[in-house]
Length: 413
Image (cartoon, rainbow, N blue to C red; front, side, top):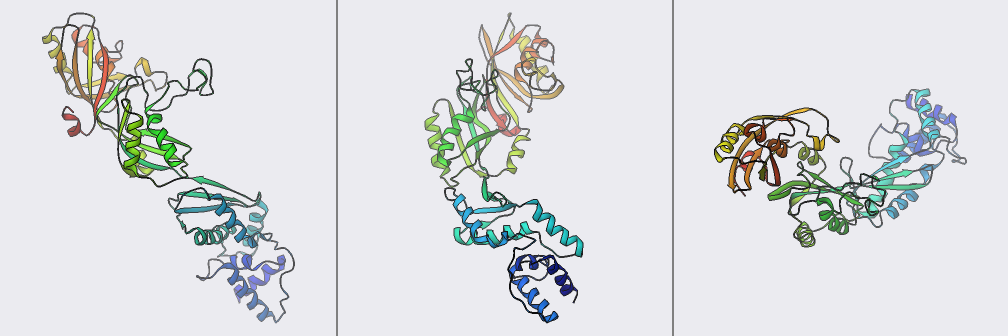
């Protein structure tokens, strides 16, 4: 009788439709729609009151009859997904504020304990139709597409969630940054200085890999997430740097990664090469970014004066296993916080020398600035090769030859 009393009160608001009547008790009982629940409650009410039911003639004061349009909205969703490949989806809805305010007023006035919000019913019922007609599965945690129903404007908008694959890349050409850089002068708008390309550099590892990816997946763009980054003038050799490629708004979600790898390597031959290890997901990006892998470098060093092998060996012995105190280098101070970082040199050895320069291999903790380890950066890095030898030294060329665990970076690729 408590429910029937509540039904009687609800019906005083006007010609409330069966969907809305049932939805006010939507969390009671299972396996039936709000429409059927409302029909049952209405029937019970008229039986209890011994009154006739002549049918609904006016507009529902709660939903304003928008709940009659489930099929219409389902067709709009299906049309919006026409050119998008997906297997899972999720619906959201934006409804006129007056409808939300009206249903919440009824909840409050009658102290209803088990109502269902109108958005939930719209999303569920439209979703059921779409799922059946397009053979799609609703996924509440990780949908491939999210469709918003803007009820007030009568339109839909689609958010295509990113795809991710992982692998390693090698960069054979100096002068290429890891990711796209906007022109510093125009911030990407295009100007005379950048030849109206909007880019600071002609290309990047991200673009050399991503061009084929964008075409293959009919995507809006790509984002390369790397496990650290090498300097623009450094090569990335050996087994390569771990990366995750994010494919932004792909209309195609299925492709043979082995064939994609071959196509990318053919197109970027001599500049960049990749090994794709498989698909991954968004959560792995944060793991990759926070990875503190060791790095092994091969560097050619020149000095302003003659440096004996004995002096060099003594300096290298002091640097091996040493903790290096590095104030943010001058060359990156414009984009990084000015602070002192402590990083360890795990290993440093000389593998070749001649009258003009010598070659070192250095293994260091993530974040160790190798150029400054050699030059001292005007005293901002302590100790340094320059400080320990008393001879100004500088890196001529730098190659990253291994990125990974201590075991992975111990050997010489």
